Amino acid sequence: MNQTSFDFEAPLPVAPASAAPAAPPAAPPALPTLEDMAQRLEQHPDYRVLRRLLPCMDFGPGPGGAGPTQRVLVLDTETTGLSHQSDKVIELAMLLVQVDSATGLPFGPVEVFEGFEDPGMPIPKIAQEVTGISDDMVRGQRLDDAQVEAMVTRADLIVAHNAGFDRPFVEARFPCFADRAWACSFADIDWSAAGAGSAKLSALAQDRGWFYDAHRAQVDCHALLQVLSQPVGNGSTTGLGQLMAAAAQPSFRLRATASPFESKDKLKARGYRWDGEARVWACTLASRALLDAELAWLQAEVYGRRPVRPEVEALDSRVRYSARAGRPVDALDLAGRDPAAVETLEPRPEP
Image 1 (cartoon, rainbow, N blue to C red):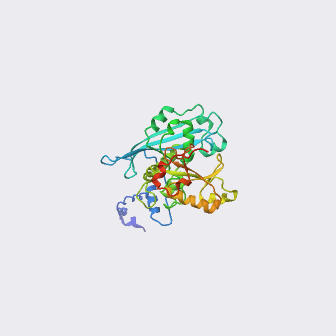
Image 2: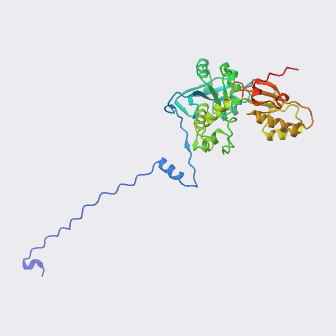
Image 3: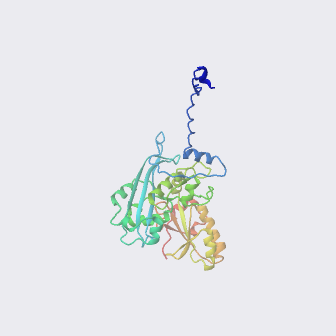
């Protein structure tokens, strides 16, 4: 017996209950940008973030009013070696910008010059490794004298981050550099007193949260300009402001003539540098007060009772950091003089 024996109809299939419409998949959460992650890391005391330094080609509108401004030229060179007498410039970069004298802040567009020059000799291997510049890159190239001079003659102040190196090189190649005021961002700013662990440009940039590819002239110029546009230490004066002030002040080059050989370690530790051409230990002092103190130290610690007269040259920003001599003054004549009177001292007669 089965269901069909009683003429029953087979039951119709039961349709499954309709399922509720599925909800659309949730959108994945937005991934944080690299800058979002950098900012989050910066908030943690165990991390520091470095960002690639990007060139600033325009610092925006200038100050209101008719206050004084200066045109500052930031310069860097790459060379075949360390001697301005035997080595040559192979790359020159310059940035020209206006700076508000009251605030030390740059403003307006940045004018740029960059070029290579064939030194007429193979670039030494060590120079190629340091600069990344090969013989092929400079072959047949020459810096445009007219363009360089036109830019330099408009500058009120030239700044380099080792002017004692760059200035003799560019003066040997371009006479127009010789009559301009110069300042050195390495020597004319007391970076140590400002809390910097190093006065190297790359370290100063890192202190401000930047990194960059060093040892190419234009990149170094942009890095230096941005570092100098910031306040130095905890003060309100920018690096550019400090350099403009330093350029307006006289300084002195002191040579420890006839210093005994055994005093070399003392002199080196004191900050003197060996001048191989003059064969004498020398230093540069930023004020008359520092010069007076250094003369007293030399007499007490180096010369003792010997009647030695060190050589002193008065320097201004038009000769400072060049290979040219300053104005000789007699160290003995400085004793008891008013600092302002030093500027009017006549050179001592040659023996």
